[in-house]
Image: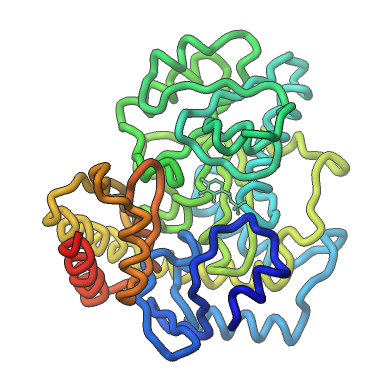
Length: 387
Ligand SMILES: *Cc1c(COP(=O)(O)O)cnc(C)c1O
């Protein structure tokens, strides 16, 4: 593939690296020359079952031969089946489907507003956190409390306030009679793989409950087994009112969702919100297999076990390692550029990501094994040793 030729036709909004893949198998990708890469990025925490997973590809192919899409004016069986699995395995009661993380959070924001509108309470302010990431639509870049994502896009929608992550006093200072909800990532992804403190979440949760404020979580990246539980909130002793999902849910097929308590979901009456593609046959057929696999016996135990193993191995480099399950970050000192390490790793057949200021990000397929992890650490040893 000619990269310069491709750039002639594509928007310049991605800083693309000069690599192109033609095939994948398990945790490995192959480029046009047949060179093999160990993928510890998974399309940014998307490919939970890796590449060419037999059950996933079989389900997608079978579904494609039957029906790919009909409108949500009709009942879509696999969509209802996915909703049932999500509800039976979470604290929520009802599911709405869309196509991406930004859309899921957009729906979450609209639902918060509509819920208080129906209750005839003039509450609309949503508190989000510094270092967060919630998507790229106008409302979700506003929820994203990082100036770099908002620059040049003003005027932004009203009604968002920013607190400091893991700092309960900063939240208390923002609460008033207009506060509708708190929206938080329990492990900040793009912000640098920062887990929320247990004590902070406990206090935040009680603060919300005491003040009639909805507690909502962005599990677009942390959900669907990524942290070793189906949802990251299950590591904390809480029951969120609304949960947003996307990334891993379809194992690579675009699908997003929000799960909400009945009392809140009922505000989305016909006409209030919709999505043409949301939860269509193809996407739902994929999500169903992903969920069935992740919930199968022992799957999540392995995620925890391999996450711990990866963390232990990474700690030998002597830099701070953090994260939950298979969502792991390693902070590099300023003089070693994470971006450079990522590029060097690529040259050596290892795909990793970066996040936050200078963090290496590891979000491999959840099916990764110890020998794959050993290979990744060996390549990193070489790459970091050359620094
Ligand atoms: C990736 C991400 C989003 C945005 O998802 P898109 O599918 O790119 O719109 C939102 N929230 C979090 C936590 C994410 O990691």
